[in-house]
Every structure is written in C-alpha cells, then in structure tokens.
Length: 120
Image 1 (cartoon, rainbow, N blue to C red):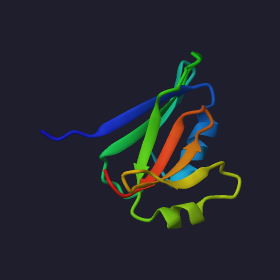
Image 2 (spheres, rainbow, N blue to C red):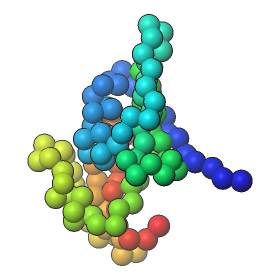
Image 3 (spheres, rainbow, N blue to C red):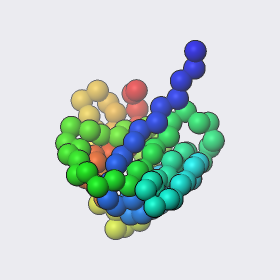
C-alpha cells in the first residue's frame, strides 16, 4: 500500500501564503479552485513525484500554529540559502547536536519552517 502526504493550512492570507511557498520552495500549482464559497490551491514540488502536497485553503478561522513545523530536507543547504531572496527572514544555518544543519524560516501565517541537510 502506497501513501502520499498532504498538509493543509487554513488561512485568511491565501495569495500571500501561496506566493511564499512558490517563491521560496519553487513549488507549482497542482490544483486550484475559486468559487464564492470555496477557494484554495494545492501545491506540489516541481519534480512531480507526488509524494507530498501542501494545500492552502482560504478560511476565516484564526489558527494557532505554535508547535507545528514544516520540515523540508535538501541535499545542499548552502545552495538553498544562496537561492533565497534577501527579504526572506531566516535564522541559521545552525548545526544541531546530531550533525544536521537547520535553517529556520517562518511563513506569512507564522508556521515554523525548517530546511535541513543531513539525517532524516
């Protein structure tokens, strides 16, 4: 049995959030819908492997994302850091005790993002 993973963020800042993930992670639109009662987008990684998706859904409810982090593994953290626009707020990279290197970001909703190299 095979699975893929889709993570959903409900936000009042749909366009800003979509643009952030497209700009920072080079994600592409896999699906998008816009009706008077329902608006959202599903993003995928450009490589097309369809293993993980990010759904951004427009909603009124305020959410507390404390304790949640989206973690993206990369094979070249230095290249990723070099690819970021200067206006993308970041902290690190920081070497963690287990040898991985973590870069800390935050999306427009305050969702913590870790981009890391090494380990699982």
